[in-house]
Length: 471
Image 1 (cartoon, one colour):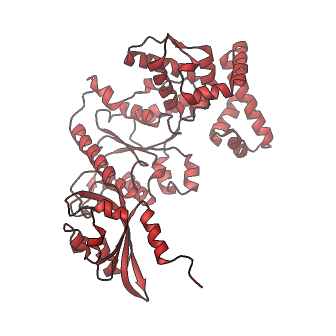
Image 2 (spheres, rainbow, N blue to C red):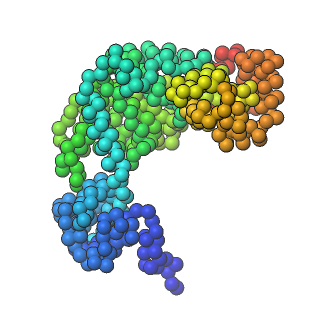
Image 3 (cartoon, rainbow, N blue to C red):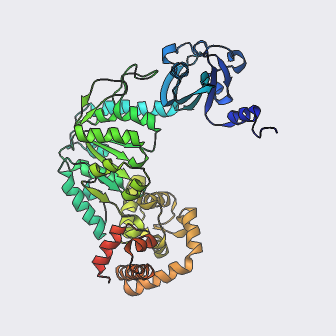
């Protein structure tokens, strides 16, 4: 009986995967190299097959080669960062996983899978270099550049929503302390804006404010960005401070912390507890005085259940937890924000837009805004750029909003009639109470189930039930 998967099939698959793959025999001689690895490393496959790995990479010392190390130890090396020069002198940065190939208890070779992170690394190092230059200067708050540099204050957070105003009040109290803060909010709700407001109302306001999105970089690269590196820490490593050192005496905002690898979360927990960091490859500990504000775009308890946030880290962060409601939950803010963004882009683009038509505002009040406040701002920015006249009309809106209007025109028109008859605030008030009552009836009084039906956090539903005195 012939095997379903032959060696030739495996080779064909390896040629089409996005990562580079190399295989060496037990002596360290190259016996296989796929196309992506050859392109990445400037290798001529025909000329390289049979040569020792250090002959193919002249800048690579034998003791630094992960392939040679795996052959010697018979142990896998996973997610190891390497920076090296090709024979043409091009600098390459990769994340490698190297595994031994064992046959009858004897190491017959090793296979290495490499992911190219050269562009990521170059960009992140440029960011750190720029941050180093910025944080090396003392910021004068009286200077008008301070506001541009460090962003927003609490007065820039526009809302008439009762729950969001309560969150702002808690954030203002937290700002005058040094305790860590955890912020939960969907993408686009303004987590970094709130963090900047906290920083600018704290005693650290004249010190560095640095933000890093944890989902933007591979985990192994993120570790070096946060904690820094020392020469010799890994192949190609150089002495470079991390963001913790650059944010010393200031505030470090870690967005989408639920995307940070668990082992890195353990190191973050140690910083929160001891105020000490250790650069990759270093034996020396460095003391840092950094305020941590972390954010998640997934409800914290769900993130814990899914294994995205360590439970011990959550307990260390949740001394103050701030929940930012999504825009569809605070529709009373839509007219306020619309006026604010029109005024903002009138000033930036030298326009004289006065507002929107009634049809556009009714559409805004009914549209789900999955991108939240950020989406609304981008819609206004685009409309102000291209509108003819002094009012934003349906035809001035992006394709997706126009499509939503055409599909839901009847419902939007009926909703507008209700608003005009009773007023916007009263109509929204009655509609919200009715939806909560329906959800509670359908769930037979089960608040957890009702919150899932309404697609809002349980604590938010409990707050609204108490607020509206719903039995």
